[in-house]
Amino acid sequence: MSKLPTTASAPFAGKVAIVTGSESGIGRETARALCRQGAAVVLNGRCPERLEHTRQALAQAGLRVAACVADVTDYADCERLVAAAITAFGQLDILVTNASISQRAYFADMQPEVFRRVLDSNVYGAVFPLKAALPYLCQSRGSVTFISSISALNGMPSGSAYCAGKAAVANLCHTLRLELADTGVHFGVVHIGFTQNDPEKRVLDAAGQPVPIAHRPPRWQKSQAEVAAIILRHIRRRRQRTVISALGQIIVLVHTYLPRLGDWIVLTTIRRLRHFYE
Ligand SMILES: NC(=O)c1ccc[n+]([C@@H]2O[C@H](COP(=O)([O-])OP(=O)(O)OC[C@H]3O[C@@H](n4cnc5c(N)ncnc54)[C@H](OP(=O)(O)O)[C@@H]3O)[C@@H](O)[C@H]2O)c1
Figure 1 (cartoon, rainbow, N blue to C red):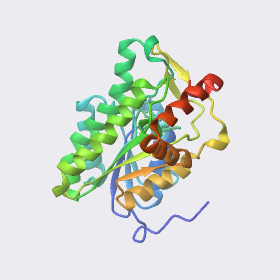
Figure 2 (figure 1 turned 120 degrees about the vertical axis):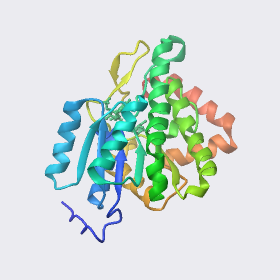
Figure 3 (figure 1 turned 90 degrees about the horizontal axis):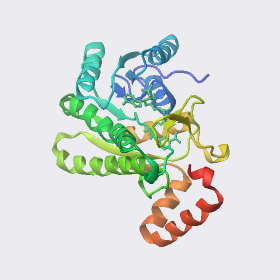
């Protein structure tokens, strides 16, 4: 195990962060990495047992964590989440809006309510925590990172509401950076590519039932710890946009300069690799 940096020399020493959706997956590893680099972190999720399990695991490793059960699509819950950070640690410097629900469902089959749930979790699940946290982030001239996806950069069959939500937060990030430029708050977006998932991860099918995520070849996936390290570098450097993975960079180039080629690649590969998109 690598040595924890001493508190004073750690890059995030003295900082307080909220990472939404951090009871599992990339959020948990981002919270762990922030703590290991000196921050105190408020963990969040909707399931009390899973959240407490993660809190205990991090606390037992000597990390400074608190936890708050809150549904980030509910504004009153987000006010409680921010209050929990202030009560536990007295300030707020970093917000990572990571909580999200994804889907495995074609638009034509989707119940309208399922579309709304996926979109809400990705849009209001970022907007509401930020709205509640903004006064404190302005005080600390802090940092906001919206976790988006490479699927915000180009449409992806079977991901309509998820892609739309991830694209919305990328645009929101840009708008807020302009609108709130005088506050000194950093607004950045990280477009994550294929990443290893917790075995328990579930996404919604067309009827809103939780189903396992589509299988992706492991060699295409980054580890959650690698992704967390990139997110931390993004926050430290106060970057406007980070696109993770070579595939992500290629998507940006093709979508910008050769959009018809991008469509051709998707339409051709979906016939042969349907399971990959679903
Ligand atoms: N894994 C990938 O390959 C990949 C690729 C691109 C982008 N991303 C993005 O990276 C982020 C993390 O993904 P992940 O793979 O780590 O997903 P994950 O394992 O499913 O984690 C998502 C977390 O968000 C929580 N959550 C969901 N809705 C919530 C809500 N309304 N309020 C509070 N918490 C909520 C979940 O807990 P509960 O459901 O128990 O509340 C869970 O802890 C997401 O924004 C995702 O879109 C991931």
